[in-house]
Image 1 (cartoon, rainbow, N blue to C red):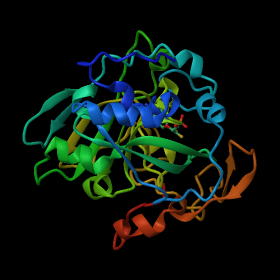
Image 2 (cartoon, rainbow, N blue to C red):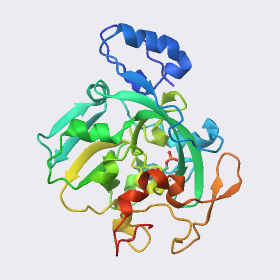
Image 3 (cartoon, rainbow, N blue to C red):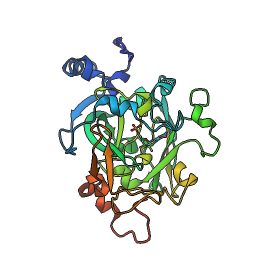
Image 4 (cartoon, rainbow, N blue to C red):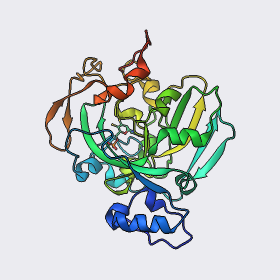
Amino acid sequence: MLIKVMRGWELPENCASPEGFSLGRRALLATALATTALPSFAHAGEKYAAGRDITPEKNATTYNNYYEFSTDKDLWQEAQALKMDPWSISFTGAVEKEQTLSLSELLRQVTLEDRVYRHRCVEAWSMVVPWTGFPMAKLVALAAPLSSAKYVAFTTLADKKTMPGLRMPFYPWPYVDSVTMAEAMNDLAFIPTGMYGRSLPPQNGGPIRIHLPWKYGFKSVKSIIKVSFLEKRPIGMWEQLQASEYGFWANVNPAVSHPRWSQASERDIGTGKRIPTQLYNGYGEFVAGLYADMPGEKLYM
Ligand code: MTE
């Protein structure tokens, strides 16, 4: 991985992607204090205790889903073709003013924090990852949505030159998925820019992705280039492809099977052990309230 030596005037993309862990976090913080343009760090501590061992970095970064590159789990080498610098994100739809921000411009306006989250894929494997990033609520605030906005959709880069998976014609690219505004504002909804103290690698959705730990992993869109505020509920890529199996809500629930397999347990990709799956992936106390009084909604697919 490239470790950039920063010149005084340069914006610190490596802060977002906290090389600080490897360079020595204290040193990084000292630099941050000396340079006003740097984003600041805040330690969230154990606000959302994972309750399980952190998955070894090697497992979490070499066993991935990123269909734009390949449907194989060992796509990490192919994913290195992803060009993550320069990177920008556009904010579109029901916002006060549509705008495009470079990643550096965005990161200058947020405070980074560390969070250890469980991640549960709809395919019944899971991991525990130490992310660095910022709350999705902060991204929403920066976008200044209009009161008519009810949903936020996230779109992945679709670059035919570097992503061979885009040649699979039956997938309705680009990869897109969305949440309600209330979900986006929930403190658990997170925007990682780093993991294991390093930049977010391409295979895990670098340079910036979303993570919604109480939902099946397919909702956690990687390598985002567009954030759209919408009045009507959009249809995500998986829902468009197979609505009978993948819905809008996709909240983790061990009692509701996927049409083709049970969701009662999951395989931890760090230990290889099978463990029971928890309702809302164990985050019910923080998110269950979002789904009170929603008769008729398929909340768990
Ligand atoms: N985002 C994009 N753009 N393409 C994908 O194929 N796969 C999803 C999600 N986000 C996917 C994606 C699925 S199914 C899962 S489980 C997680 O990314 C996997 O994230 P990880 O590779 O960091 O574990």
